[in-house]
Image 1 (cartoon, rainbow, N blue to C red):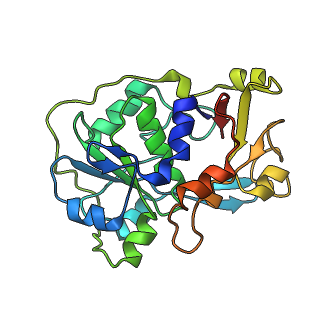
Image 2 (cartoon, rainbow, N blue to C red):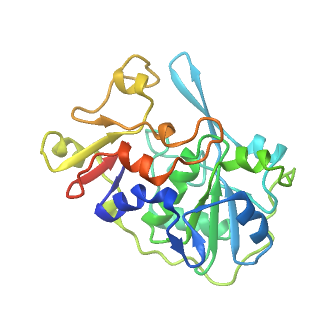
Length: 262
C-alpha cells in the first residue's frame, strides 16, 4: 500500500507541472524523449501490465509480449510480474526489499547518475508505480512519459520490435537510501481508520470503490477512504495528464495530513 508524507503528496499535486530534476522534468513529452534517445545516461523502461476480468476477479498479464511486438527504441522491459515484486508473497504485487528492487533496477541499467524515463501502455498506472518505487529506494531522477506508448505512437515516433537488448551498462552501481515512510502496512492503515490525522485515498474507479463492481475478493473500500480515481487525472482521449490545477482540485486540501493512497 503506497503512502506519502507531505513532501510526497506535494509531488503528486505537482506531477503535471514538471518540476525539473537535473535537466529532466517529472513529466516528459515524446518530443523531448525522441531528442534524448541515444544518450548514454538515459535509461528507458516499459512497465506495462495488462488487467482483464476473469471469473474470480482481475487477472494480470505481463506486457512483455506486447513489448516485443513494438516498443520505444532502446527501451528495456521492467517486469512487474516478476523481478520487480516479491513473487513469494501471498498477495500479488507485494513490494520486494529495497535491496531486491535496487538489484533489479541495476540489471536494467539504472545506476547513480542515470536518468530514467518510464512508460506503459495502460494509463500510466504501472509506470507511476515504478516511479514511486524508485523514490522509495531514494532515486529521484526518474520521469514519466506523458501519454505513454499511446502518445508515442500517436506522434508517429519510431518503434522497435523484438526482445530488449540492454547494451548500455553505465559504470558504477545504484546507491540505496530507503524512505520507509513512503510505504504503509496493514497495521498502520487499520490504526489510521477514523483517527482524523490520516487521509485515505482509494485510486480505483468509482464502481469498484462503491462496491458495484467486484474485481477483488470483497467489494467496497477501506472505511473512511475517499475516491480519487487515478484514471480521472488523465485526458481520456490522449492519455496525458490533465493540467496540474485540475489534478490539485481533485485532491483533498489537507496539507497537514499523512496521506495513504491505494
